[in-house]
Image (cartoon, rainbow, N blue to C red; front, side):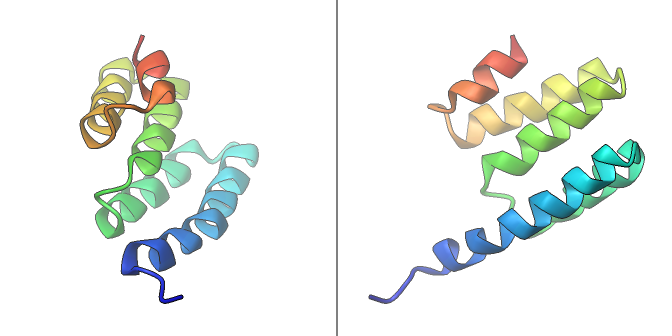
Length: 88
């Protein structure tokens, strides 16, 4: 079975997520935010990186930026319950 381009690209997000979480665990929140923004540029159709960005912005007390990221995740996937609960 031939995979669609998006499915193949999504496979790479797991490794990227792990790398970003390592930055977070090392308390390098600003670096994690930069990395997530880079991922968003590569995968603008994926809601997950916007959720990550929202979480890191929230962790940094940038509540307006966090809300904007969560709203963008909702715009991309209006059925994403994580985005709705995070925005609330």
